[in-house]
Length: 407
Image 1 (cartoon, one colour):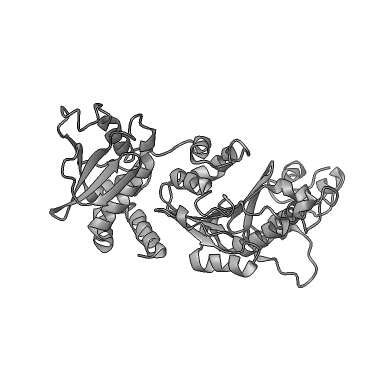
Image 2 (cartoon, one colour):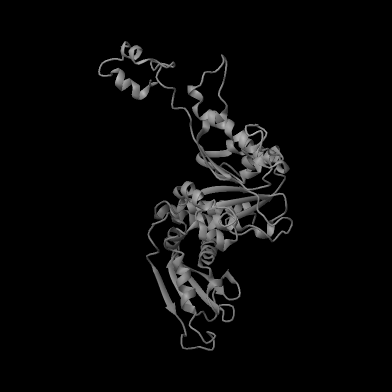
């Protein structure tokens, strides 16, 4: 199965989880009950952090999932030991069985936050007195509890996730409070997220901390990571990696055409000024209305080694200089333009800009509110001149001053 097809299946289930029982059941039939069980088991394992349970590496635990659908039962086994694994089928001697309705479990795991928990969820404990098989402990209880936790509230702290997943967005940088402010309202939606730069340099198995952080923060999103190095070993459910030259505008546009449109784009790549400018120009058009584009590590705008300058602060060849030029576009309808001027696509779609130390977040939408009323004077007027103007019934010069130029 290709990565793209796997993502399409997951997105189908995520979207169906917002609907009614008939829509959910139809999606399960299309994807397949066994494949659906595999996807849900993988999500539960990812959220459970089973490696944090003391003694788990010495006493593996088998948990049987028994998921009812269309009059049959789909079996899937989660095995927690030195690593957490899962596979279709039935365990010979499971330590516990979690029984649930497959459609209800899908809604609980991949549905919107505060969606009903799996109503038919029953835990059957097996052979709890067999302490030798349990490794002499009862750590089967925390394993089951952590797995079940994945069906309930999922709003985890972004800073804590950054530390746990090995991302530098909190600690080395202090981006997570700003991301929480802007990304938080979107975290319960089905999203496509693109991050440029995976980390780990040439080591294929190194990096990916931010991708894993976003996966946990956005439980209903598909995450795409792009790097100049091959990072295929970091792929997992809902995370796909792409290898390519991030200084190549043609390659960047192909990402938008082939994988987009995106709800969020994050540029955490080379930090070179030219690369950041190319990324914004190429990918902002592929951000959905209501989506966001984040540019990180803007401190390099002042570092000559990255193409920046601490002297020419408004140079459009630096990242900050370029981003500053976008701000006038927010008010493009109020500006006096030469005859024949046409606003750029960025002017027409950039609806907000937020700057923080070394970070900027841009909002995408429709920037067409219309210019201020034509009767509002474009030149500063004295109080006497304003008093002589016929402002219309019920509108005095004092009230007009609220909407027009003051003294």
